[in-house]
Length: 90
Image (tube, rainbow, N blue to C red; front, side, top):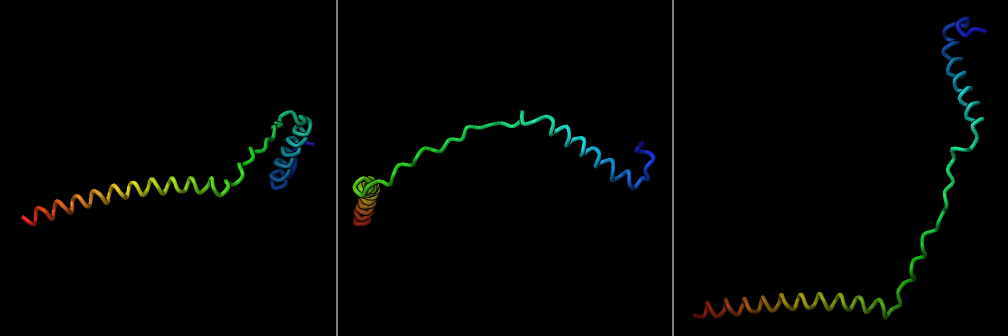
């Protein structure tokens, strides 16, 4: 049977179906050679939550560094205020 013997609307339907059938047949004959097999690894277990003393030590160290910065800034402000007060008092 020649495909050109079919009417045009039917050819528009049959031709893509024919190509799909050929592609399916070729794909099924090929097998699973192209399929990759990956090794699945679980991510490492996360460390458990830190105990209270470990956590509070870190927090206290952070607070200490912040307080030292604030102390330095307050000291600079006091020096500036004293300088301004001495200059305006003259």
